[in-house]
Image (cartoon, rainbow, N blue to C red; front, side, top):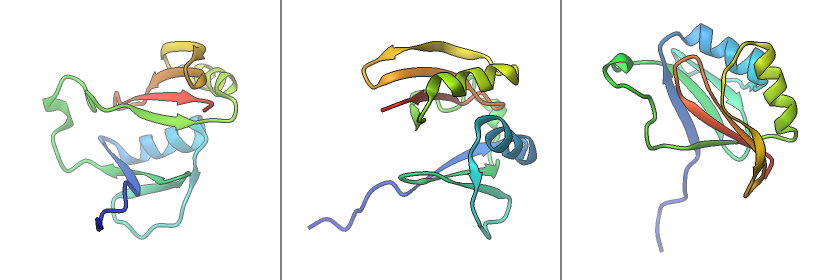
Length: 120
């Protein structure tokens, strides 16, 4: 029997922790969670929490952050979230559409991480 349980936390390294904390809290709508992690912001999410950490690597040394990694965020109302993001001048890289998991769209965060929002 394997000792591995599975993914339990998602962390994105960011250039400006306060800017990213405000973006994910105030624009996207994540709810902050209690955390004692230094230089980090943690948000309550299901099935795993999302964290942002002040970068410890040179994020500017690569052309695209997270290239090859797809981060999916489940939302009750993807179209409503897309409208909310656009009101804050967030560019959608894929407009809302019907996908294989229901309504979905994509956007980039302040650091350039691409996220897909879907209804599931």
